[in-house]
Length: 229
Image (cartoon, rainbow, N blue to C red):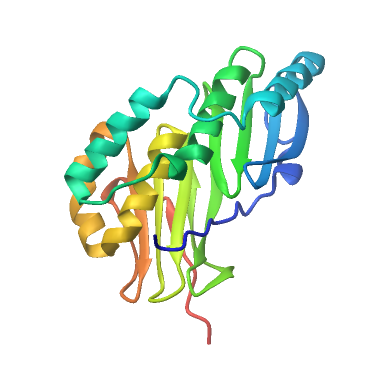
């Protein structure tokens, strides 16, 4: 299995609190799945939001939870199109984000969730938040940013040869699974496959020795960092 590392959101969840219209902000962070889950949620009833976030904390680390059939279907589709076998264990973070979103629906006006650097936006209105795409050779440095508007953003990368694949998709599981699989096949094949990802509402940004490239639907939403002198 190729080592997988995650990117970081340029605007931290803590800094984001209080900047979203639609009510007061509530933030929480707790250990889960061997990493950290953070949440910033907005709404008029902060006590209700707090209770919803407590429910998320108490249940988010449960395995695929009745969603295994859909996840297996996605894994079969990925294997058919890429030849890559994505393990169920590779989808735990995306699945946890999706289940958290279900638990928060109706209790919050909007929320931004993060597990280990994978993000999910909850809310009827789109957001506009820059997500950093880390340099796969140095994950503390960003090569570019992509504007997140909804759904989930997941980046998988490897240090050598340097390669990263960022997938924006409608769900956490889809973003998680496709970023894992596309990392295995490389940028050229991933970008060639991109038109087939429309059924999953998935877009991608890929970075390798050829530079940073992305699907046409992300035009105007990707900002590439100028080369360092």
